[in-house]
Image (cartoon, rainbow, N blue to C red):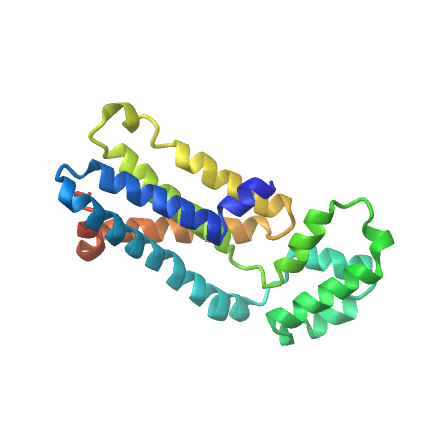
Length: 214
């Protein structure tokens, strides 16, 4: 679960963005244009990842004010439910510090939980709805799937579904690790797919990756 979760995080999506852009550049028949296409693709995909991520973290999540399932669990297990009334008044760093102190002071309660899971719960001190990891993974999965489907190499066409297996695994890992609910990942995934479809529908972004209009 940690492996899949991290592939949908900022470092994992960066690696996949570079791989996807390399794939686009590789298919360009003119050698001199390969580097240009690679750089252009990286910048474009990162913009479609980073701008919604910023809006989600600073506007959408604070608007809906949903606590992560793991944080709800920690507060319940330590009889700290009174914090729910002020939880959304704390900023991300304050929640991080509080969770770290809470787990440290109640180590006996969580002795059967893997240390990496506890550390992940502390690190993921943001709010819950919608899931940014699911957005990232399904956005990239749709872009990569379409690139495989449209590839000039027929042996690659049949593997267009494979990126979605990865994206579903990322979404599942978010629920399994207690970072999100099923609703969180579903909405995040739908937003990612819709953004990717928009990516290829608009003339400006579609031409950047030289795809034909559907």
